[in-house]
Length: 86
Image (cartoon, rainbow, N blue to C red; front, side, top):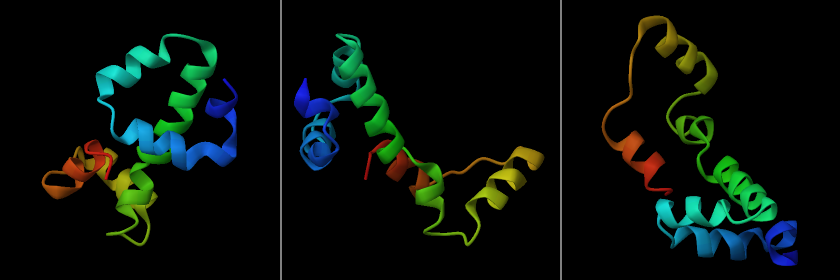
């Protein structure tokens, strides 16, 4: 309880979550409110597409707007990195 919601413990929580399957984490997040909040905080930190795209584009938001306007999708290494939580 105290571990999940203490911001000082994010590195510990991330270490546990990084080694767990997505199915396990989703099941865990369904157990209680604090587990769900912890999972949501983790996903905001780890599944941040703008952070990943900023490694390749100066303005990831502009790139995403262009994608939306043209219907373009990202293929290759970037989606693999995103979903592997790397």
